Amino acid sequence: MSHNHPYYAAAYIRLSREDGDKAESDSIANQKKLIADFIKDSGDFTLYDTYIDDGYTGTRFDRPAFLRMLTDIETGNINCVIVKDLSRFGRDYIDTGKYLERYFPEKKVRFVSITDHIDSARQAYDMLLPIKNIFNEQYARDISQKIHASVSTKQKAGEFIGAFPSYGYQKSPADKNKLVIDEYAAQIVRRIFDLYRQGFGKIRIAGILNEEGIVCPSEYKKLSGQRYRNSNRLNTTSYWTYSTVNRILQNEMYIGNMVQGKKFQQMRGKAKAKDPADWIVVPQTHEAIIDQTTWECVQDLLKRRTRTLRLDRNQGVFAGFLKCGDCGRSLVKKTPAHKADTESVYYCGTYVRSGRQFCTPHKIPHTVLADILQRDLQILLNSTGDLQNLARLALSAHPCARQPSESEVQKTQTELDKVRKLKKAVYEDYQDGLLSKEECLSYRQDYQKKEELLAKRLSALSTPSASRPALPHSPWLSRLLSTQSVESLDRQTIAAMLSEIKVYESNTVKITYRFRKNTNNRFPDTYVQDRGAK
Image 1 (tube, one colour):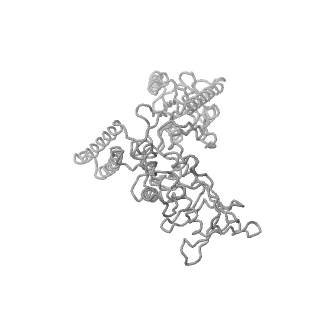
Image 2 (cartoon, rainbow, N blue to C red; image 1 turned 135 degrees about the vertical axis):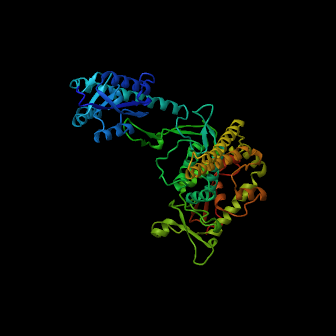
Image 3 (cartoon, rainbow, N blue to C red; image 1 turned 90 degrees about the horizontal axis):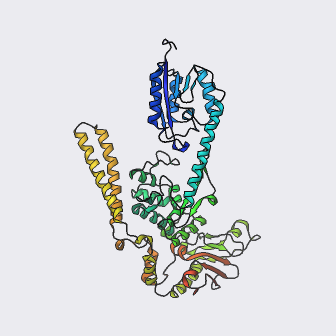
């Protein structure tokens, strides 16, 4: 080799536990030393730069350091690539062959694989090179299958294996595969479910949370110190949205079930969503945030897909529950011009849209239907006995009654003290000239947000369970317990007590209630009325 034509070399290093790389022999430090010693002993090369991809699989070539190395090849900065062995360069035999046999020769780039004794400047590539590449890929494929099998086994055992738990939970300090409740975030989750039960739409719920300055789940995770990135979220979106609220309302994790395996990713491929029927669901693996009754009620309301309600005018109180007893279609409401909503009349949707040849009117006035329901619900309540005592028994088992552990409180207090010290240190660094004014203000703003968040969390954890609301705020429940009667019908009363109302042409209303199991069969789950449906 003539020194008039020196080789400016790139030392390329890669390590990935996913590929089954051995921690010691394939470590970054070991690869770096091996290449440095080779360059020193050879005398043919001048090291231009070292390119390290730590934690990137060899089955793909869109690695940051590898792409940076290609840029330096294109600009003529380097004309030699040195690796410890072929598997460090890549485990995909097709793409590896493309670089070694086509790209590097075209760019006049010398390639050296030290332990494989490959040097393109000294001899042609070994005939066994493609076979070695195939073995490398097969090894990676085998490791990938073993990793998938191991992950699946843990998921089926109910162990949490994700990087970030669902909003409202955190990894247990004692066991990273178990989840414990994050009380501050859990309160927000309970409130979302309660607002939806009351009839607030998902967009309105998001608006309420944004108006109150409650940070959205992705920002909450970042402020909590987690290196979280939501690939589905726009960079500028740092607030509550319809989709965020929608995902929370449908997340089965909140009733204590571990739900994993929603996506599958093949080697070199993109992650693909799996059918919900193929998800791995293990019941009762962690403490629930939402009780079963609330969950079932909300899931039922979600299926009905009712529109956002104007609760101040009691609009749409029966929406999603009222059906034609003959054709099964929903009844639609018609309100005369300049009349109150209570003067509305309900008609079969098929009759309204398609005419009498397909179904009959099934007409029933709002006032008549409300009167039937109010009287029947009162009969049911009279049969249940002491409502106050029933409420106390229910509340004693409610998740809100949970008392956080001392370690949770202490950990949060320690984090809060640390953030306050850091915030103070930022100002001191500014005074000493170590930070510019802009840097100081930026750091202080970040620490201020973290301090407020931790203070809220600490307050939530420190509130005695006796003084916490035993249930999410519910005006209709409060009225029910104080008066022992159904004074008026609203959306939440209907959602809590009814499953379906069918109206027939024969002056009959068939009401299906939710809670036969809870009344010891003293009241049927379906009650037929023929009073006033005219």
